[in-house]
Amino acid sequence: MSAIDTSEPTRRDILYIATGAAGAVGVAFVAWPFIHQMNPDASTLALSTTEVDIASLEPGQSVVVKWRGKPVFIRNRTEKEIEEAKSTPIAELKDKAARNANLKDSAAEATDANRAVEGKENILLMVGVCTHLGCIPLGQQGDFGGWFCPCHGSHYDTAGRIRKGPAPENLLVPNYEFISDSVVKIG
Amino acid sequence: MSGGHSAYVPKSGFGKWMDARLPLARLVYDSFVAYPVPRNLNNWYTFGAILSLMLIIQLITGIVLAMHYTPESTMAFASVEKIMRDVNYGWLLRYMHANGASFFFIAVYIHIFRGFYYGSYKNPREVLWILGVIIFILMMATGFMGYVLPWGQMSFWGATVITGFFTAIPIVGDSIHTLLLGGFAVDNPTLNRFFSLHYLLPFMIIGVVILHVWALHVTGQTNPTGVEVKSEQDTVPFTPYATMKDLLAMIVFMLVLAYFIFYMPNFLGHPDNYIEAQPLVTPAHIVPEWYYLPFYAILRAITFDIGIPFTDIVLINSKLGGVIAMFGSLLIFFVVPWLDTSKVRSAAYRPLFKQFFWIFVIVCVGLGWLGSKPAEGIYTTMSQIFTFWYFFHFIVILPVLGLVEKPKPIPASITEAVLAKTGNGDTSNANN
Image: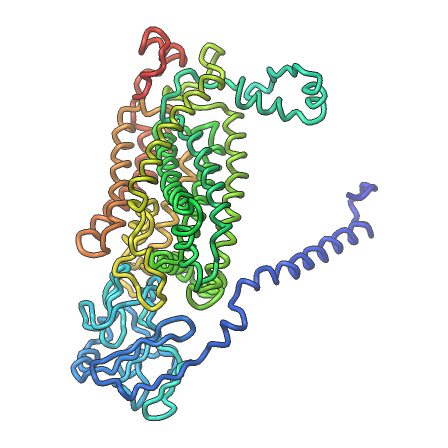
C-alpha cells in the first residue's frame, strides 16, 4: 500500500496495521450486543427458584413441577424401588457419575445414596429432561421401573440413572434443599 | 451467456437507450430466451423450473400469512386457528403454504436424485452442485423453523429435539443451546426468533438460487446422455422449447398439489400439531415432518458409544455420534463430485452404477420409513444396516465403481444419440 517500495517497514505501514487492528477490535465490540441479545433475558433469569410442598406425596407417588421452564420430577420412592436401585452394581451403569449438583465431589459415583440428599433418601428429585435430546421421559415406565423416554427409547431406573438407549447421562439432580420437613426449595 | 456472446438486438429507441445504461433486457433475453439448452432434456429436467415456482408460491403465501399470524407463545396457536376460521381464504393460504412446503421438498428430492442419476455434479459443474446443496440445507432450516410457528405439540417437541442436537457438542454445547433458545427450554423467545429467521431465510435462498442459475448458465445444462453440447445442432433455444416443456410440467405438478390442498390438506401433517404446545407433556411418539425422516432415522441409528476397544474410554458417545452421522449424511453431498471417480456422467452408460443407484434410492426411502417407526427392536437394527449402506454407497461404492466398471459405448454427440433412438429427432421418449 505504501507509495514507496522498500523492504523496510515505514511509519505509514505501522499506521495502516494499527488502524486495521483498531477497526477489528471495534467490529468485535459492536458485534457482541447482537450476539448477546440472544441469551436469556432478565425476566427469564429471574425465575430461578421454586418452592414445593410435598407433604401429601405418598410412597409410590410422584409429581411434576415446573422450574426454569423445565419439568422437575419428585418421586417418593417405595422400599422396593430403593432396594432395586441399591442392588444395582455400579459396573452395570452406562453413566457412572452421580450428576448430583448437591454433592461437593463432582466425580462421585452414581450410587443410590449419591442420587438423593442425606436424610431424605426416599425422595428422588431430578430435572425431567432426557439427557439425549431434551424430551420429557414418562414415569413408572420402561424396562427398569423408572422412566422411559418415548422419543428415542432411553430407559432410566428407579434412581433416574440411564440404563438402556441413546441418552449419554443420568437424569440431572439440581440444587435443592428441604426448608422444612415437607417443603423443598429447588434452585 | 454460455459462449459469452449476446444475440440480443434492441429494437425500439428506448430499448437502445436502456441497453447502453442498464442492459437488463439483454440479460433476460440471453438467459431465458436465446439461451441454448440440450435438445434431449427429458421431464426429470423440469424440476428446476418447478422449484423456482414453488419458492415464489411459498414467499407469497408466507408474506400474507405473516399479516395475520402472532409470534407469541400464548397467542400463536390461536392466531393460526383464526387464520383457518376467520381470515378470508385463510384456510386456503395456510394449506397452500403447508402443503407447498411438502411439495417443495418432493421437487427438490427428485431434482437431487436426477443429479445423482445423470452425474450432474461432475466436472465442470462442482460449484453448481455445491450451491444446490447449500440451497437444500437452507430449505431444511427454513422448513424446520416454519413448522415451529403454529406452536402445536409437534412444533414444540420437534424444536426441543432439534435444538437439543447442539447440546451434543463437547464443552460449549450447553452455552450454544441456551443462546439459540434464549432460555433454558423452548419458550416465547425461541418462537420469536424462529419467526424472524423463518422470514429471513427464504430471501437468502433467493440469493443462492441466483448464483445456482448463474453457475448453470456458465457451464450449460447436462442432459440424459451426459455428453457435452458440441454444436448448435445439439441444442434448441430456451424459448419456446424449454419454456413450454417447463410450463406443462408445472401445470401437472400444480394439479397434484391442488389435489392435496383441496381434498387431503392434512394428509402430510401430524394430527398432534392440532394440540397446543404443552411444555410438560411429551407426545408418545415424536416424528418430524416426512421430509426429514431419513435423516432422523440416521440420528437414531447410532445407539452405541464409539471408544478405544477393550477399554472404558469413550471418544464419541452415542448422542454425539448420532448428531455427527446425521449432519454427515447431509454434508457428504458436498464432496460427491470428488468421491465419484467415473469419467462417464450418465447412469444410462454405467450398468453397475445404475443398479447401485436404485439400491441407494431404496435405502433412502427405507430410512424414511424407519424414521417414522418407534426407535426400538428390529427398527433400530434395520436403521443401523441402512445407515451403514448410506455411507458405504458414498465412501466406497462411488470411488470404486469408477475404477472397476466397464461403461457402455458413449455416443459421439447428443444429436447422434437422439437420432439413434428415434430416427427423427423426436425427444419425447428419451426418458430412460
